[in-house]
Every structure is written in C-alpha cells, then in structure tokens.
Length: 218
Ligand code: ADP
Ligand code: TYD
Image (cartoon, rainbow, N blue to C red; front, side, top):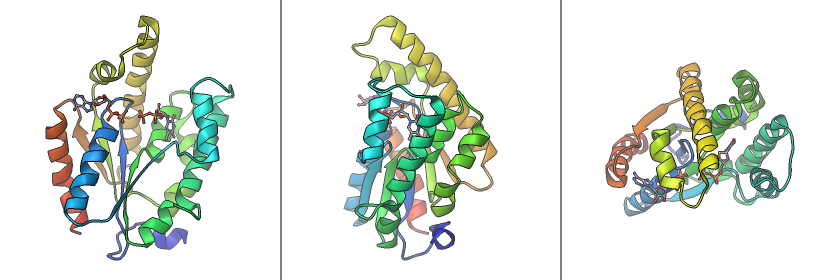
C-alpha cells in the first residue's frame, strides 16, 4: 500500500491537504471556510485533526494539559503512533477515505512534529521517526498559514497570566522558525504553500481558495 499511496495524484483518489501553522495562526478557521466552499463546489470533503480523539490522542491531550508527565521523546513517539492510527485505522482512517475519493483536510500532520519537537531534539530524528507516515501518504499540498507570533498570541491570549504568555510566545517564535527550516530542508519532495496569515479571515480564505482550486483541478 505504501508505494501506491505515496503521491496521491491519481484521478480516482481524493486530495489530501494538510494545514500547518503555530497555535492561533487561524488553521481551524480556514479549514471550516474551505470545507464549506468545497461542499458548494460539490466536492466531498472530510475534515480531521491531530492530535486525534483516538485513545493515543487522548493520552497526548492528557500530557499536553499536564495531567501526565513524560519525556519529550516519548511525546514525539506518541504523535508518531497517533498519526499512523490516523492514517490506517479501520473506522475513519485517512488512507481509506482518500481511496474512496474523499478529499481530506487535516488540521496538522507531520510538519507539526518536525516543527514542535525539533525545538527540543534534532529535526532529523523527528523526520526519521515519521518515515512510515511520509512513505504511506504525503499531502497533495501542505498549506502553512504564516502568522506572526505576536498576532497569534493576541488572538489566543485571553484569560492567561503574563508569565504564561511570555513563555508561550517565545516558544511560538521558535516553532515558526523550525517550520521554515523544515520546509527548506524538504522543499524537493513536498509541495508547500505559504499563506500570509496576518490578514483578515476573508483575505486569507480567498488566497487559500485560489491555490486549492488549482490543486483540485489537476
Ligand atoms: P488555530 O486553529 O490555528 O489554533 P484558530 O482558527 O482557532 O487558530 O484561530 C484562533 C483565534 O483567532 C480564533 O478566536 C479565531 O476566531 C481568530 N482568528 C482566526 N483567524 C483570524 C484572522 N485572520 N484575523 C483575526 N482573528 C482570527
Ligand atoms: P491544539 O489544542 O489542537 O492546538 P491548535 O488549535 O493550535 O492546533 O493542540 C495541538 C498542540 O499539539 C499544538 O500546540 C501543537 C502540538 N503538536 C505537537 O507538538 N506535535 C505534533 O505532531 C502535533 C500534530 C501537534
């Protein structure tokens, strides 16, 4: 299956579009709008996200909210497992959706791992650890909503104290840099579309739609 799925460019298969960006960049807002536009165009679409709501995803959520503590390498490995389940599980796995001709929009995929985990460990380790996912299914395109960390913070920062805000912003700055580093590293094998996320919701949505129209007409 891995070889046949690698570049999902076959006419019978659905497209697979991964949205990436720092927290608060506007991914889920834009996925919602794109999903509605696709439906109006008569394109059958399925939206999903990582971490998933599977048992592995629930474990990740408990770690992210501080209820369970573990090593960074363990967290990165759990995301690897959650992603493989996201692709391959029998009930709503992405691979079977795409093979049925459904277009899949995901809020985060392996570039999230490359960016977030390489802040604490070597990026090549993270890329290798995700090698199964990238050989099973590369996105038709990865849409990176590039939002300035200050702007993203303003969008998400309500109800947090000052120190938390500062810590989070410094991390978002690093994560954004790691995304750009990963895109540069993998530019030969991945189709990356960078969209300026600092504009209005409607301007960003129109720009994304211009790009996606080209992808779905291939
Ligand atoms: P993400 O899924 O990337 O974390 P969201 O789509 O949830 O981001 O957006 C975070 C917050 O910012 C939400 O409250 C959303 O309504 C708001 N938002 C999203 N895009 C924009 C934008 N372009 N301009 C202003 N606010 C936005
Ligand atoms: P979530 O609440 O879904 O945030 P967002 O709305 O910004 O997507 O939490 C996802 C968090 O998990 C986010 O901070 C990024 C992080 N993450 C990783 O660290 N590694 C990964 O592989 C993925 C998919 C997400």
